[in-house]
Length: 475
Image (cartoon, rainbow, N blue to C red; front, side, top):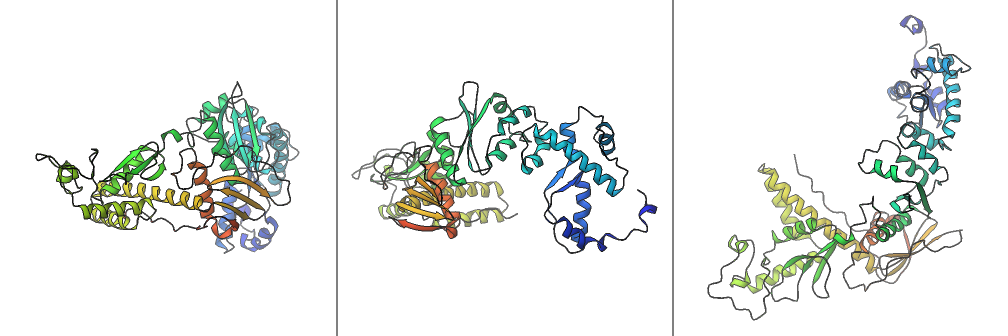
């Protein structure tokens, strides 16, 4: 095309209204679609007709994936000639559109051999067909487009990986795209079969995923397989002089915050609390009648004025009891006073351009608030007791933080494919093996509280919780 050819043509604005009506919500098919679509979008926006975001099928991208070994290049003219399409492109709108239609029909036939059964498969095929393991795409042909859990299995039918999906077929096929995670390539090479469980909704799928991961410990899963690394922050309130510590398992005595994802996070939580509350840091066992030795020396934290040291006689009972009470407020979900103190300290350091120190305070506060929020979420759901929660056609039955049943209106009831973990005393700390499931449910109910109908509850329903504060540092 030249300027002379289009000089007498009407401007695009004269046909935009008709064009927008014609396009409607149809799929936009083009050869090198980003080029054509860019001009169309710009024209619509320039004319005040809003954004145009259609589903796009790019025949050039599909041809590069499926035909690159048969043709020297993927120009439309080359493809039309080599593949003997019915129409020949001439750089004129109608001829090129007809040639693109011929090419699309041919590509659809080829794509069927790669398990393409719908538009969602086709739009992702350009990313998938060139994958080294693309031949395994045929394993996805029987997967439904429904919520559920998928399992990648190896040579001996061992479970390599467990995942959840809103759309099983689309999610599993996405692994053959541009996923650069280091573990994906080796996992797909080992994978020999794909198994799946259809489930009523994404929430149930996430719960069943967490149960399967906890029981099978698949080699390629990381999230959900580390319950043995979870830990608690403990305040031994039965001690004469309570102190904070990080423990792997909760005890019958003491207050516990957790379980938390790692010792690193637990240590940050302890540091956050110790930076505000002058609790002792020494690990000596002290009785109520403890008498310090005459030559006892205060620990370094006490000498710096950030902790009391009762083992050396450097502790005021009333002040220490106040610190313990404030610590217990945090364990009960109220981190307000300590949050205000640490936020002010972080802001002060940032204003003085001491950004590394400010970031340390931020990280400690972030860990503390995350721990407290986890505690509040799980405690709130456990306090609800046995409850029946409805959203749309689905009803979940939850018992002290465990999903025990799901009912979909108009369908025959069926048992969950994986049994829930054993029940625990509502007053005891949440066990490590329970926390993932309880958090999944609590986060969902908290996020969607305005759309839920609680039809029965043996305890107290207190969702939603207030949002945590924003801890970003000012630039």
